[in-house]
Length: 161
Image (cartoon, rainbow, N blue to C red; front, top):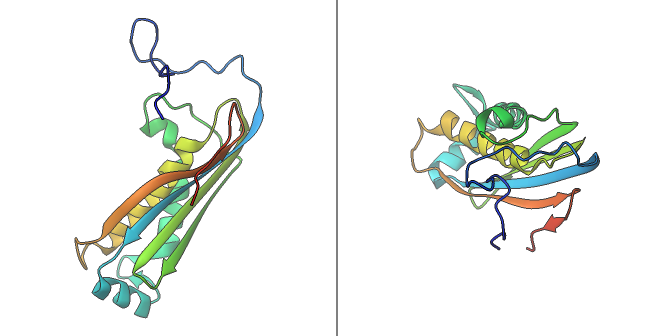
């Protein structure tokens, strides 16, 4: 879906931060997902070692990194508002098909949404796993990163399965 107007462009076609000053505070929530695929030998080795490497506990480190990344979204993406999120949770599921499913859920009561924070959290968690495991193989794939749902604000969005 292409928006009729891009919200970060002014009448002179220059980039601007969206002014949310007149908006009301509402409860907002966003869920993003990243999917990683590991080579069979890497996944099997990690599973055998309870996802621990010489660099540390892969899953726990990725969870912390994802939360830290989500909290810094406003510093990483130029036109994002800096938000003090009410909550951010990262869940990482290991799937026998050599996949890791990373879900980041962010919430806040604010004048703007937390979609970018959720997407950043999932992304940083995936990149952390890649970094911690790349010595085993560079054939690790971050297959997709996508918004699964958002609630609050003007409209809600839920991605269909």
